[in-house]
Image (cartoon, rainbow, N blue to C red):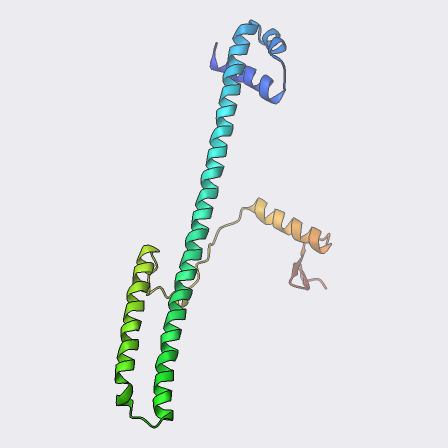
Length: 190
């Protein structure tokens, strides 16, 4: 059987929904031969469905993993901020208490050293978490300019956009466009 005949059978079977007997009559082949081709098609479509389900599952798993990673990154940053804030407040409280009690700052030197060690330990822990989550501490996106995608539109795409805009605005004149809430006549007429 030629590939062209197989395509004809596939078309009649899948698109037209014809039965094996009717297809065999139309292509002048025996029912057994046509049934073999349609069985191959059915196996292929089932395997196609399986491939599609696997691809959908992989895509969902990737989304779930990305979501979990983003949650962990957010948690790591919040934890780091919380610990840094806590240590900062403890240092401030220690200094304020010394000032309030009229003690020299040298009297709280050991307390400040302990808090410095706590800050260093928190820094090490933060760096380890950031390394595992691939967070770069010097990521400063504030200085970067946003990326814009520029694409050329075909004449058909422009026409479709104008048509859609006219439908949405209720305008029938092809020489009139709406910019914001302003109606503009492209021919300069009022």
